[in-house]
Image (cartoon, rainbow, N blue to C red; front, side, top):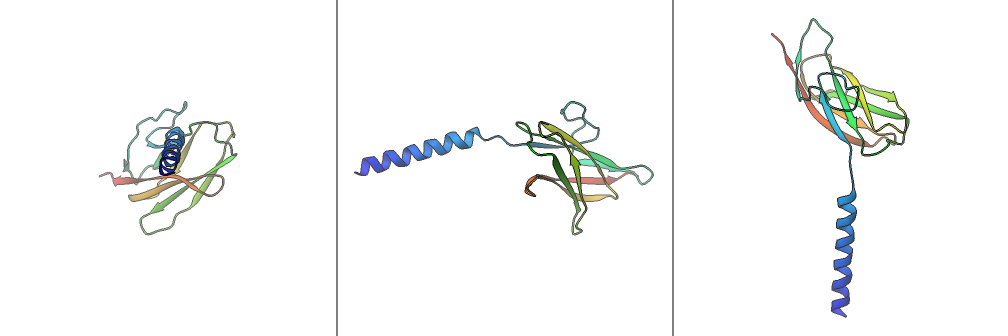
Length: 132
């Protein structure tokens, strides 16, 4: 009886391992330039802030398969300050999306990607360094 229980537990662990190893997730990149083919261009987490220019970074999201929804959201939060949520309409069959995020001042930001069910599907931190 004990050996059947051990075999059952072993099988459950094997199935969990197979399931978890088969999971794929999206990747998020913060870039200096806009991607035209889903490949990151100038990926970084530190960007120069110039008070005399428009300061934007690009958030590139690659999905393991078709996204499946027609909208994706992006949130910018400066440390201690809630930020705006922007959204983009996309083709549900898209496997990547690139969003231009305005960065209004220097400092540290948390940038989040929010899926169509309002779940956070990824986030990261970037720093806008004041250019002198």
